[in-house]
Structures are given as structure tokens and as C-alpha cells.
Length: 203
Picture: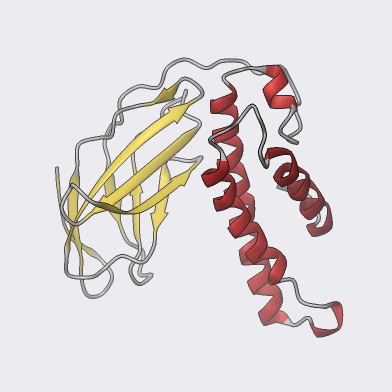
């Protein structure tokens, strides 16, 4: 996370090369593509040195943060799929700082809640912390059958963007680690109103 841009690019390119058609991870193409999309957006936003200004530098920094987060989420996927297989982990391009240690099983998701902070079309969904969880995920639907919006983070608070106003939305969370995922939580529902506030939340 603290690498310079050039070192981060070299590191990321090494991971992309190592994970492309990696025999230990035959099903990783979709997850790798999600990271590559974010990484490519960051690289494309780096302005030439002679054209740098506050605006394009701010855009670049925002895209770097997104790429950092995408890489972290991809690393959690890789660790989970590797299932503590050291040979598999060593094939990824990620740096192993210590022998992987298994955590306990995650529990059920508890106390899902939602709020907004004034950003248009965004909901912040969170649940209680689980000491064994490496990743927290949320999904959002209009009908609890077709899930159209997704988010994931290493912390228990997740922001989901691009949501419609004045429509009832259903939200669920799950948590996971290298052992697997919890079931999706029971739904809570809410409506984004005017201004951007959750008008109602129901278990």
C-alpha cells in the first residue's frame, strides 16, 4: 500500500503476469480481470510530469487508492483459493512474509445496518466485526432475487455507489476467510430519499 507509484506498477504487473493462466488458480480469470480493470484505470490516469496539476494529480491519487483496494481484495481471493498451499501462494507474485496461518471459521453476520453521508446514490452498509473475517461483502437488490449492486472490503463498513433514489432496496452482507463464507444475512431494506438519506430501514 505504501509503494511508490512506479514500484506499485512493477509489483502489480508481476502479479498480473504470475496469475494469468496460473495452473494453481484455473478459475481466477474473472477476479483477476476486476483488478486489472482498476489497475489499468490508475495507470492511464498518471499525468506526464510536465502536465501535472492539482486536478489530474488528485484523480491519479483517487485511482491509486481504488487500485490498492482492488489488489487487496484480489489477494484475499488468492489466499482463500490457495487454501494454505505454499506452492500455490509462491506462484502468485505476492510476497509471503510468514507461513500462512489458518484462522477460525467466521460466524454468522450480525447487526447489519445502512446509512448515507450525502453523496448521491451511495449507501454505507456495515455489520458487527468478526475477528476471523478477512473480507466483508454486501449485495443490494430491488426484489431480493436479482442482485444488481455489490461491494467488498477488508473492513466491516462498505460503500456501494450508483444506487437509485426513491426505490425500496434490499441489502444483505456476508463475511469470509480462507475457510469460506458465511451465509448471506437476512435482508434489511431502505429507501434513498431527498436529500441523500435512508428514509427507512427494516429488518
